Image (cartoon, rainbow, N blue to C red; front, side, top):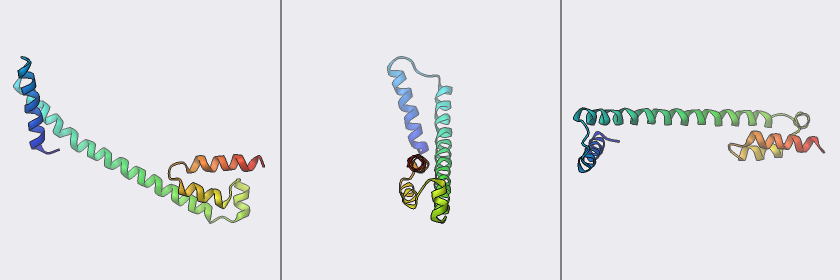
Length: 110
């Protein structure tokens, strides 16, 4: 949000208060504009940090699943999963753990 838009918002807010007969104190108008300017960069930084965290989590998940895919069939059977289960887990982005857990439960009951 640019400074021009923030100033316009603060002025519009002050105008709304004047129309209702409740004009804000001039010092509070400046505080409102400054607080809006301070919030915008913080939200961008938080959003960027969350994006980086999600990307790192996805990369770790892919690396773990690729590591499992390199195991031989006997090892995968010991874990209670198959290569097909791993491929299904790799194609579903966020639910790989629950898919593999369900496969282990299903394969242990057989």
